[in-house]
Image (cartoon, rainbow, N blue to C red; front, side, top):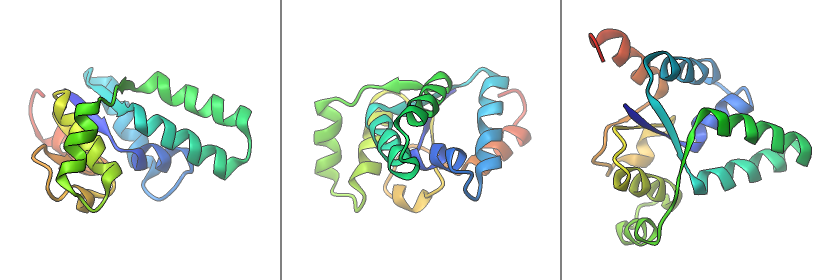
Length: 141
């Protein structure tokens, strides 16, 4: 199972925001069932920027992002992904770019705290809690 993890899920954990415990449980489940968690290369730059901006500590930022990179696989963002996202004209271009990158790389699910941003997605979009509940109620995934 291949999951594209939205930037907000990662940041919930980093900043211990509402939902961080569920997001941490998501990563425990990913490991437990042998699934693969992915983020886009553009998410890495966004995450790095936001953490550095919030912490004002470049060394700490590198440590945190290094820890994140041990949990996920990076998906390259291609010109095709960018152009396809641009043509969609979604309200949130960053989310559309993540979606197109995930779609073009065969992701099974997008995991996000903001499903409304993916209203036009053809891939299944679930909150971390919904994905965990799906696992817990579906035999032999």
